[in-house]
Length: 209
Image (cartoon, rainbow, N blue to C red; front, side, top):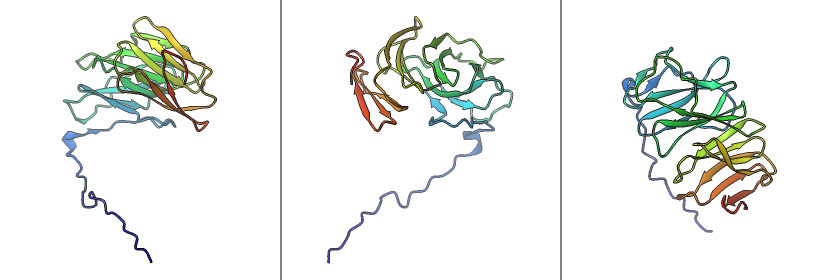
């Protein structure tokens, strides 16, 4: 009779330690919207978190250098007319962030280095091209001002954020809901996972999978 050998994990005796209260953020009303999203995004300067908001969608931006209890009146980034579903910081500018929403739009925001006195309500640009809610956004890793969005209309769009123009629309490639999207290291290819049980590797310059 053969003996089955089970390899033990080298992390079996590793336990995490919670940080002190002054090293964490407290009293943040994280969004309760049902969506497969991380609800947060971070860069070397800020952490952004999608939060509960009446009368539309919003997210809060907090400096990494200042932790602790968050004031309930802390200014928010507001402008969407429905809940925010995804946020992503620009890899080329630590003060620029994009947001996607149930209101079918994508908005790009300029975040100041100082804490604003009131809510930020005016985006740099609003991108309109989806017919259903937009659940995924992702900046191109190497090309400046290029942003990808994917919505529940099974549509993937590449945008020129500088002009607000649509560079490419992949509208006949996915037959069902798009679950996730990712770029390779240099941005020459993107991959999508879909409810139709297919993983597609796409060259956006050739427009085929």
